[in-house]
Image (cartoon, rainbow, N blue to C red; front, side):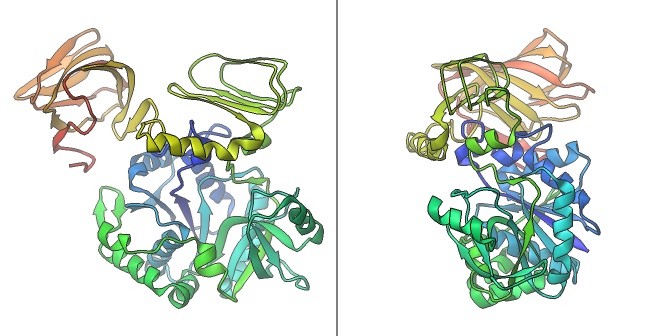
Length: 468
């Protein structure tokens, strides 16, 4: 049996402004109807003899991951990292979990942020790797290069080797164009996909030999983990002692037990906006246009609008991405440098690298419509059957006006039901809760007023989602 493990811990900085720390690229529908995380989950269904799914994600994304699984009728264990420690510790946590619950199973490790166009070819590569993994090999999947790409690391297979699983000679960092051309011509080099298949016990043994302090920290964090609703929370204090490292550096580059299985499945890691331009269907001028976009004299460009009309004239090889609170304009050959803009925003302690104007919560979402000195206006959507925490604010008062649906409101000792166009005033320090007991989404406008309107001005007394 193969246990799929999906790693969903990345932040997708190079895909800003659409990707944000609190809503990263793997949780966005960047290619097709489903998010990249959902596509990864559904892709696994093409693999034969799979067991229960495991997802390892950041604590901040737990409700988004759970909701996206629910949307596609999928189930899986969700393990929460209190903070990122790269892929090697995440794989160790999953391996320890599987070794305890499904001894003898294989572990298929998949990043949540890849595009793979051919699911059957993907499944065939997994199947061809099965026997090598069962025999105790650490299998990595190398993408057969279609071009001398300089954005990827490479895996060199032993030149004289044959068969479906070739011994790994070395891992190579991102090369120059000239060197990449020689790699492709040789036939022994493959793009490093970051996907793996192995026995958990074999991986743990290699980690014990090469990074024992990492394995010890992961064991301690898992032993002290606690259940929280449907999640398993790793212990923050012990996990903090865990070194941060990738699987390649911690294990694969040090082991003599690695093999590479070639894969040709329309793979792309979507590491930048230029990569998205490459995987989408383009018009006669070579443009990818998403949303409300008009162009004149524009060629070979990627233009993405989310909230308003975007018009472009006379551009070649550009990327334009519009969101409600930010617009990116970049040369297509320099989109890797978007991370420099994100770093500037972080140094200025701005919100744009962290959250969108619409912020998702387990009960629904809110969007800031307007704000100024001593006031803020939000549009709030509460899912059917959901409720906000019983809470109070020390510095602000609120007015709620129902737009659609029916709101059940707790205000201190009162229980009030509000229909469309009805409103209620929530004084400073009043205990209050908002619930949607209906079958349709509840939408309302919230007007906040006060000296301080920060999101941290909240005292919770009860919460269905364990956020006390």
